[in-house]
Length: 212
Image 1: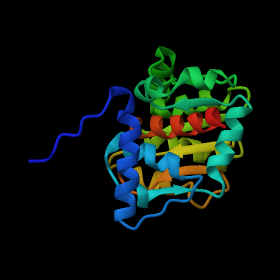
Image 2: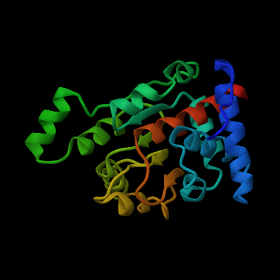
Image 3: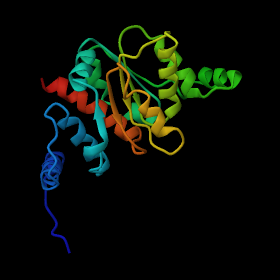
Image 4: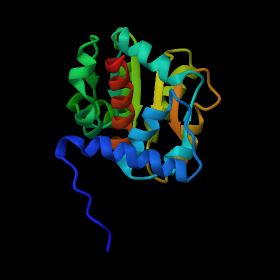
């Protein structure tokens, strides 16, 4: 039987990150300093150490995202679950808001009329927002595909993409669309991800700006 570790409620998160650091060292994994808080928060959220190997960052991705946040970037998610999990109060300090258009009634109507997914219409709505936008996609690979198509057509170029949809259909190829692009990104290769992972990445970026 494992020994119960008694930790004060206010120290649980700190102790969790200490355990993550210990286990990473045991596995012989050293994370780049700028990426470390993001990857560790994803592991903290998921209890899955695979993310230490599969989370992929474009050059200087963390600093690029934080600069966008400081410039008042909005965050657009593809689920209300991710929206609920992102620290809106922290983002608001820099003038940004979190949006999710997926459940909007007019989005559903337009998607049905055009026979496309709500994710497609949602990304088009997001592309029309003023100012910089960080896209945090944790559920719908169609959202990533739509963003890529808008970029290929010269209509819109996303400033930053967090691509972590989870699942089996089109998930892997949708993520890989951005790996060779010139769009700054944090992508999780493979099938794993989810709204909770998208929110965790956003929060790690936000908390890093806040701490600085």
